[in-house]
Image (cartoon, rainbow, N blue to C red; front, side, top):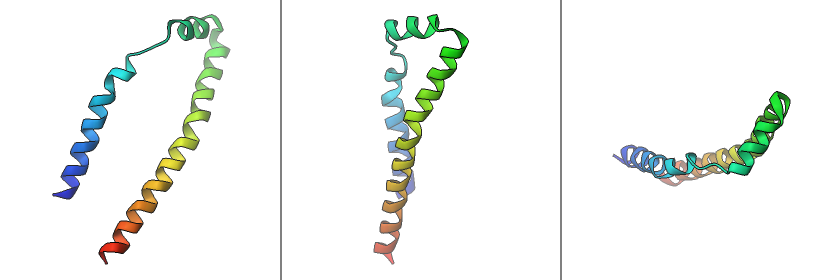
Length: 74
């Protein structure tokens, strides 16, 4: 029962965040479009560089919380 609640809340959070994916800055779009293929590639790499540390931090906190919850139940 608890896993269904977690999955439901996760899906709700994803659905609630979907309008944020449709936003885009016109200045950012035109600047990225004007840089050419190499600039677009560098922009993609920059996004990944900013994303990876956040994902690692999130995963580490999630693993820590899961381990703590399992230790508390045993």
